[in-house]
Length: 291
Image (tube, rainbow, N blue to C red; front, side, top):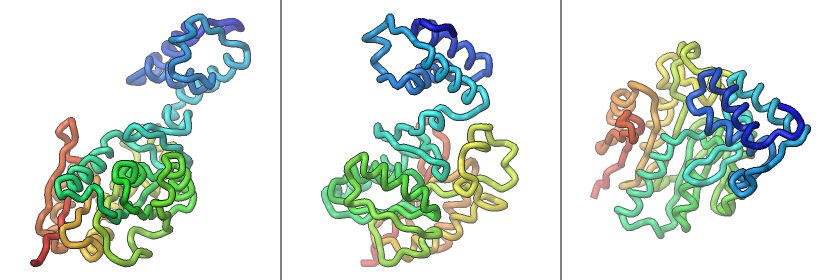
């Protein structure tokens, strides 16, 4: 690109470069990366169609082209990802939140509303909170709820707190260093987790964006990918209140195994949840009241 390039020409150049690498959404990627590189709002190209890119801007665009061409995800280049309509900043110790994980938020909110408890001071624990996307989203929807975001990484927790502050829920978001639930005491109304669930030998099957840019300890769950569920399920059974709800996201072909673990430990109400593509995605567990 030369000095004085129009925004539209610059975007087409970037789109062509991304298309040559067979990325699934080159036009969207080009728009997002241009706005990021040039520090523009998403509306700027519409309101100023004759926008001219100067030499510094062209250099910045070249940089994002190179990073994306090497497989770095758009969200990593931007430094944030949208989840539940909210912005969540990322660092090296946090996964990129996936749209499918919003299903956990949806199910918790359905449960709270169905129980008539959305206005209560519900206690929520998010195990392996990472960027805090699940817990912070829930706290924005449940104004009286209080949450604990636990993670083994202090850097991840620092980012989760920053994201909670951005959304104005930091007073109700308590960060805690914990290996799964080992450092937590007491009982809770809601426990959620999107734990590591990829089999250790599946590294070669991961895309470069995940393999090279997501933190390994947030991805891999042992030989069969179920180590986290074996650790979490008994803790959840002891820590969830009667009629409280637990939700685990899981990987491909793991739903039956995760459900079996839950039933073996004592959960009587165990239900599969499917995503919008009808893919098994979440296991829901309710500890039934003994009354």
